[in-house]
Image 1 (cartoon, one colour):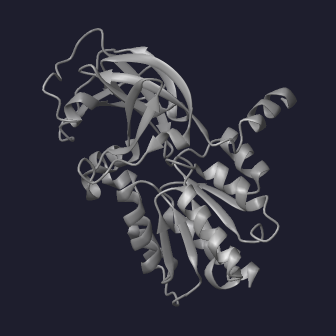
Image 2 (cartoon, one colour; image 1 turned 180 degrees about the vertical axis):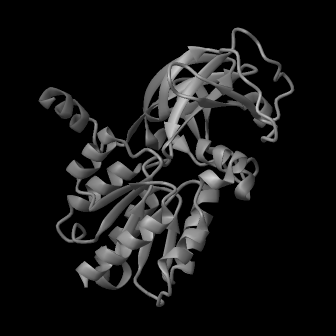
Length: 305
């Protein structure tokens, strides 16, 4: 256990990601290896009626019933016919296990988050975007897909539910300065709407950890930490700088480390909790538990006042 933990901790805060490359109609796409449970040859799938058109149905490897999403069909690829040589990428995030049908799996590459750029608005606009980044993997450009957005569109009930805020009861307005790093356009909007409904009115959104970090350095230089950074909320997966690297930078800084920091991610597992704890995160929780996030924010801010 000790050696295993040390291996985990050596990976913490390095701002690196392992990308699994796969193809759909010979186009390269990528997924964070941290989301992948298993790669397997496709299996027969039981059709389920009244589902999203991209949902093939379910299958049951071992004792777990898993929903299968036809990724070529979801992406609007003309060649979305089922092929016995297709691959299932079985994933785990947001406390769910889902299999995505793809055509081939190419392999895994380890790169820096700085090698992943946000798509510009000519190919990525508003909530319709399904790409969170374009990665330079060697000589190849790989489109990193927003799997959280894909699942949220197919099964909205599995994503952030603003209605959870109602269960918290009457709330007062709070002008504490909240800094939030989230790269998904859809989830960023949902988080912002939920927190505003919860009474938090002073929110500053960033699409990656680097931009939030540079904002913090500016606040620090102006001696405005207490006024402009009451609490930080960060995703883990983000272009340019991931949430673990951001956490390490904040908690290694003598002046900034007192700012409460919450990791709010679809990737919270036992291993990720070890990483986040060692890096100094005050709290960690899994999306889409927005009501829980608000309660934790309330507690951390009350303790820091």
